[in-house]
Image (cartoon, rainbow, N blue to C red; front, side, top):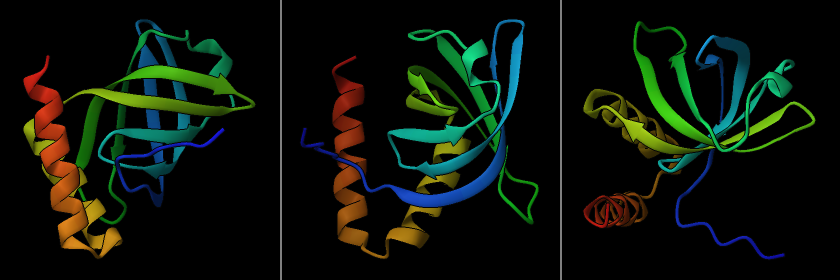
Length: 123
């Protein structure tokens, strides 16, 4: 199966908190993009597929916290895959900068941001 990604993924490690209603799970971000996240969480089985998950993580050596709402796409062997459904303007700014610093290709990043804007217009 060929995976077609529209967004660059970067390897990024940070502790994260995932919550669904009363359920809260501690995990680690493994990689991320402007579209989604891959996390590892030992208690991942407590999360329900197809349901919104609140995620927050702090950028290491800073007081910047990225908070978002994701849709739980898969949850296998402690690997949690989420698509980003909602992210506030401040968090997307920090996420964009993080990706920008790691991708190293401004034109690629701008195409990805334009695609995000196009997606937003269709909702």
